[in-house]
Image 1 (spheres, rainbow, N blue to C red):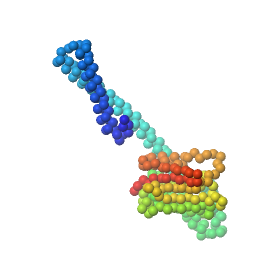
Image 2: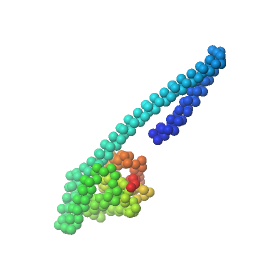
Image 3: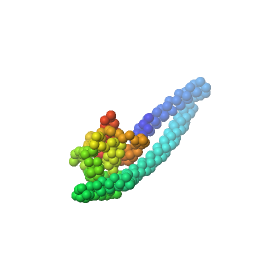
Image 4: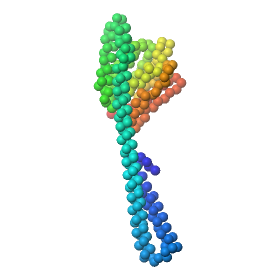
Length: 276
């Protein structure tokens, strides 16, 4: 009954009342039975014995409750410390993983290939591409150690990241970002939207015959990243590590849940905004 820390007062009151009532009733009932059937003692002696017996029984009950609660709190405290340390490690791993994902050779290779192809055709666009690429890296380096950042900051980086993807995939990729201004100062876990957009690209076909559409929008205090589902035929199934990392980082900051919905045609992840 009332197992959580926030219900400690209720649990102690209910537990103490129940045990004290049970102790007093059982102890007195047993005393009357023994005196009436066995000892046949005088009233004064019986009252004194009953008082002493009740005092000893209540003291033992209080001692049992104190020992039980001490063991319980030590167990909960140990579990809480272990969970906190685990979540810190997960948070650090997620941040470092997001950084490594972007700075890996494949990411550089793809973007350098894209850059080399557009330099002869459109030098101005090539300059814009380098500027947006620089913006993405700068954001990662500046925000990788933060637990939360403003949605405005995250969306600015996401637009730069989207520019790189659009330049690479052209009309085969459509990205729509529609978030009202009043949400922009609320907080979000850094690199989470970028990671979700990256996962959409990684796990879905992006081609002229099957264009990929990614939408980013706000619903009921959440930011949703959704895409039409056209999964690649992959040898190894997705482990879901990216989503699990986002979930664990949110556990450090909020009791709100990251929600995933999937239908035959669409996949969406809803991330709660933390507040200003």
